[in-house]
Amino acid sequence: MAKKERLTPAERRRRYREKRKNDPEKAAEIKRKDLERYHARKKLVAEMSIQEHRMKKRIWQEANKRRRMKKIMLLLNTPGPSSLPEILRMTPSATLTPSEVSTRSLRERKKVKR
Image (tube, rainbow, N blue to C red; front, side):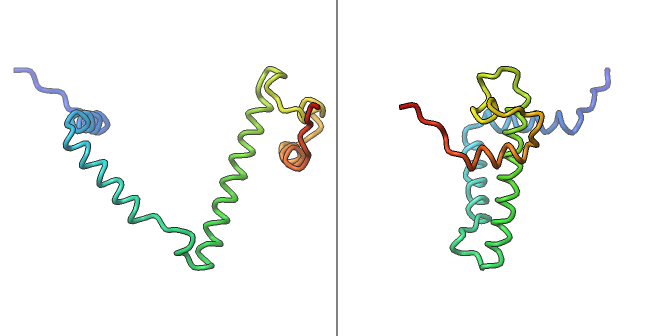
């Protein structure tokens, strides 16, 4: 008799999730529980204290800052000039830092063809 190979924890989890996904009743139950957990944890801005709101706002601002910088870095690393915004094509990007590029492009008006 050959000894059965043991599954790694990741494989065990994967098989469990597949089995759970294939059963529509279990899948619906898990979806419902996830939704309940989400609603229990979420907190509206109106329900927050001033201090909590400030902390949350600071977290949101930092996340947006990182997202904008990531977007700019992606644009700077893109090979084709057609994908770059107009402000980046007009200004040599070697002389500007990414933060300067982001503030410039956000503050300046977009040119409209008439």
